[in-house]
Length: 151
Ligand code: ZN
Image (cartoon, rainbow, N blue to C red; front, side):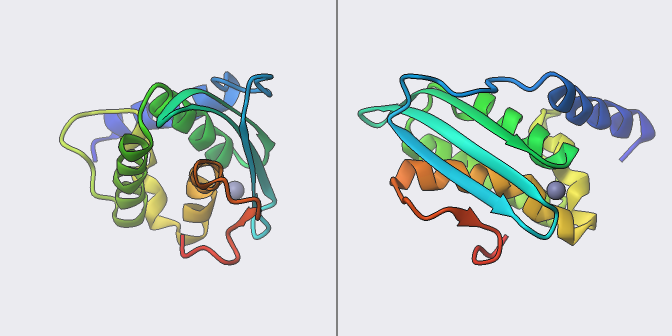
């Protein structure tokens, strides 16, 4: 990766961390799930408004490291308006990027997280918000904890 790209990608993560998108609790949420990453101390709650099969609205709230919060922020922007199946495909794509470091051909905000693969402990930070989201989608009341999820 060129250093220009590294700078750009760091900017994406810092920007989402400083100005998180869709942060807070949406009053119309009909699904809520919580994620916990005890190894880093990250917390993330996801509030989801599911209408039929579509993610009509989504927000998150939480605390923790820059990667966990930036990733949750980016996740909300990615899945809003998508169907459940489209959102799951986006997660698969993101998971592939953070676990392999394989960058998509197009420069995109999710590619900013490719560097995470070099730091295996941080992969759980990057996927925490996604796991909380997937639990909300499944309507699974059990908190998503990185202790019992593969990544
Ligand atoms: Zn973390």
